[in-house]
Length: 203
Image 1: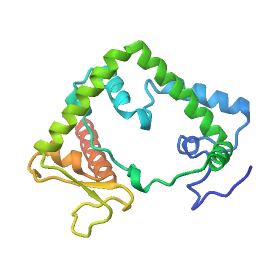
Image 2: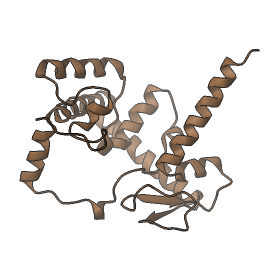
Image 3: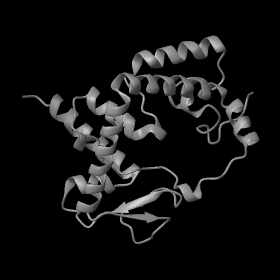
């Protein structure tokens, strides 16, 4: 089904579109795209399995639990998520059938990775990660701000997602954990560009 994209950016099969693929592919093309993506990415993180994904990421990169502590960004709060009836869910799944296949593929891969990692071992690490996140939240004097707040220095793009403020702005970790999505991305990009410039500078 051909549907126009809102602003040329938003529409059906958004995940595949964001990854550079057409939102209207044949079954053969879709299978090839999924195989390509599977070969390119060592790990695809799953939003509703984020803590498990972070544990897998830390082991893949030989990081510590401290390296994967995060505060939730750009996620609608539970109380403002719309309730969809079964028919609407089915319609959306059919409309986004290519994305659904992509999701099912990597969700199945995630489940296999967890089983290979060890279900009990994963549960223990997820519990440790959540406890460590709570410690950071307390040590940073962080609090969650629900909805828009004009007094915030850094604001999320929507009142449907939470913002965070910290009483410990002198701590770089606390500041980075509390930054909204867009300022955080801008900060990371600036640091990456600085590193790139330093690498290219003549010695």
